[in-house]
Length: 261
Image 1 (cartoon, rainbow, N blue to C red):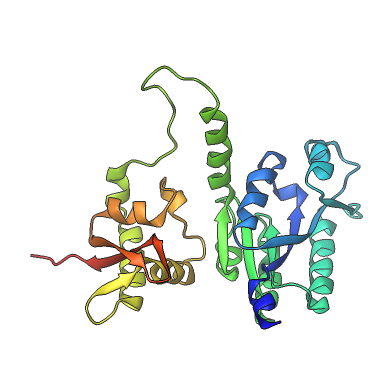
Image 2: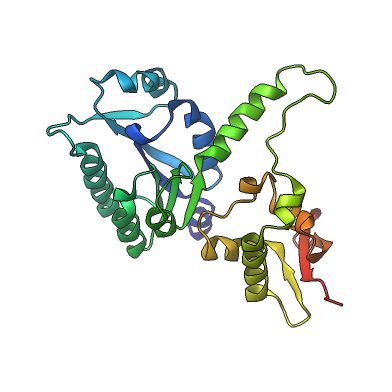
């Protein structure tokens, strides 16, 4: 019985603010959610009588998302946010979930994220880079949807033939990444927190520490799919590969801060 519990995927409730999310990103967004667990509830909130939400309608059946109708009773008041928050609390009290995915760029959900985490559940936020900092840091991890736009456009570009050397690239220049002092400091702080007495640190715990220090950290923000690629680009660490102790076919990355001469 215990093994069944351990193997069970995390159960998530995905709650989407339709007014603050892009319909064309729902597929890469749900793929991102699937990295962390299974979406057992998928609900989207908005006033479906308004034409600005028409782009969502063909996505609802395709991805089995339940639309929740919420009329705007008063001009200037966001009844949609209130409906989402009430539903989130109802779902929280069922104790059927391991976490929540809140899709919005609205800071009104800051207290909701804090309340869910106070109950011991994980919160993943999804929103644009304009999302206010309080909501970002209130989440365990926050994924900027611009990353998902890059994934979506990459899938399209991979299916199109380009003349040699002309294929577009979303990667940020290596030079600008190396000279990003804020990023270098963040990487160094995460490394120092988990490094052993011999100076080496497993990249897995480093990645976990990075998310603790900065919920919005993601190597894809800097144009790199994997953290190991970003670490190699920065150039301040020695990198070595070792065989995974439980899987000889898998490799682990370890890093050590280079000596300054």
